[in-house]
Length: 274
Image 1 (cartoon, rainbow, N blue to C red):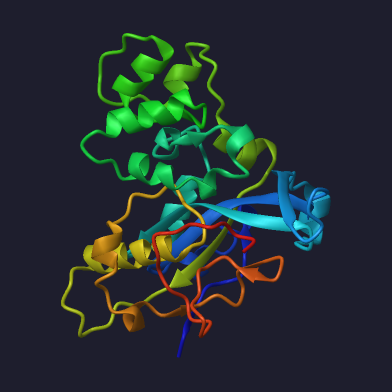
Image 2: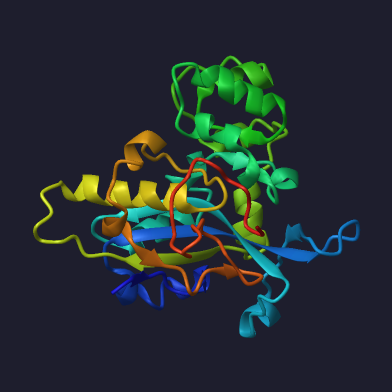
């Protein structure tokens, strides 16, 4: 039997369905964007502006002209509900310290493989993140030294939330708050998983590997701290087999697949409409 991701849900579904989410597993959250035929290439679909999910849209969601862009992959070895609940309010811990991609870059950040280094930083992570900030792709990151350099500050301390910098009237876009609260645009899917009784790994390790497998199987980059590809590549694909029937963008899976239509991992991120 193949484990099945649930269909895409809006954040308003979380609290009324708490019991259903009080299970271990992995999840993906992100945002809906409008899409249209590219006028320069009639055979290609272009991703446009983020969708404003007002009451009319939520009463009868029509995904025909929408694209779901995953922003984050996560896991819980006990309770998906508590993790998702902590994600949806971007003015409080821990979400007030998540990386902010500039809103103007949101509809294509997932194609930037260079963001993987800032997400899971090597020794020269400060240099990499500084380059990303300079390119105006990231407006906020939870590294004080980098924020000091870019915004010419002299802050003392290891960590400051985005609220700290916004109080200083810095030109920072809190795109996560704009999308989730102002646009009411926060969507997620999840995969309930029970750890096999004969698995000897710790619960933490088991679900970290699942989270990493999902990260490297998606067609686009997400802002998640996961295991390196070479470590995930060693995992038995049969152990992490799952289905994607409910996660389709314009008739195309959000996951990478081989010629046999089986989900697989790879280092490449070619985007969600290929």
